[in-house]
Length: 341
Ligand code: MRU
Image: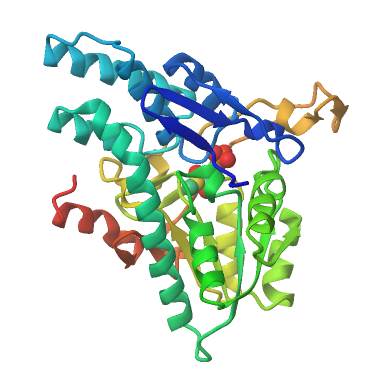
């Protein structure tokens, strides 16, 4: 059975509730934006929440929501719904931007539906560009060993994945020895989700504790680190899952190329640097409890940022997009040159 994060037919949408994985595979109906907001906030669906948000809006629009007679009022309605969705998880970039472009075209519902296919296409391109670049950087031409963080795969996208798209592309070319995947505390996206989907597809994967990452890079012959992105600032700084920054520091120390794989829509040229990216902080209970089991004294003070910012100079391999691989500081410039923003 294929693992799909979203199942969409015009006017109807289901999500795979990722909180139940890997124990239970359950799809749940999402009737509109409010339910999508809750699913995104509670991380039933995660990765950049753009797709679920957009599709829930498409469901509402297909159901006749919004003022149809007046294009200006419809535009305002869509903008309000998108702002509500963005508030569920504020760090990701590509919620409003894609749809704002669609609004210009005036065909909001149809445009949103097209995003699903575009995301799958873009991820295949990201995979191909990333595989080629990584293999081009090793004198023996592969196979290579990678290390990745969090979940950036089928479960975080419309399919194939971004950083996991690169992993998949290498595996398809018989050029992947192994991928180390961090468990990704405190929510365990690596152990619960990445390990699940990679094993599901027969990709050789080894799960490690987050704290074993630097040792794995040094002791287990990691050739490149590839992670995803939630938002890329104009100077190429990248917000991604908490722990990414320390992986980049370790990779730099060990002279291992560090790549970010993300669609160009993750770029936010309105923010000059990563220090301006809003970082979501999540409840302390994610650290102090695992289900009903207490992991810490419940009143302890907790700081639980969901993301961190990796400075562009640590992204030594480059940012892998659907257009190719770019030095971090050039990505937003490329966007402008292509007239995309
Ligand atoms: O908190 P999460 O699980 O939503 O964090 C996900 C990440 O940080 C991913 O690397 C990023 O969103 C890219 S997913 C294609």
